[in-house]
Image (tube, rainbow, N blue to C red):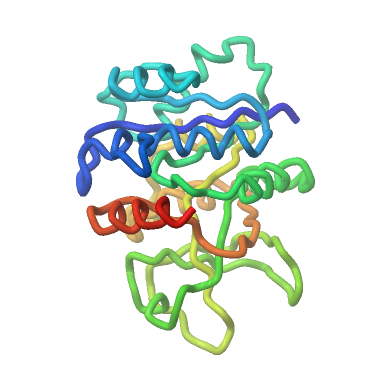
Length: 244
């Protein structure tokens, strides 16, 4: 397997416009994400940028960035557009989709996501989950819950479903972390399909993959990385940078 890590990023985020260039401890957030991905040593890393300002920030830091059409509707569209330029010969048969708003994602988490594709022949798409941060996660619709075939002591399992709904029972709840690894053909098949009924109902695009019959496996991380979606998240990320 010859993976590549691609980080989609655009300035026009709804809740926090311009967040890829938000300063966190003296560095733009997108540069921090890039550095964490490079530290994983999975393969080459590139940013699929929706805006020239992002390209400039990444290249100034010594990274690779591709400018894509800002009108592209999704991160997967942006990744495929970047791949057409980065790898027209299709040398890379696996793609790790790392969101550009995880400035402290652990390299080991990315390695675990890529490793699932390498170890599980039946795995079309890999992703990451982590334990709930507290009881409130169980009823919070903003926390996406993953239902896996996960036995005691196992660190990965096949995903049966993802939901925003409340989960009941005594078993721990696993929250989904939005990092994906795709076999290249699975990414192309997923992206070519229209939104599915369950995807539209739950507003979760990974359900499109399940409805297409693609197999998703998830690795269990020790904890969910900080994700920066709001001004409050940015404040927390800056505080975390000061503590490092």
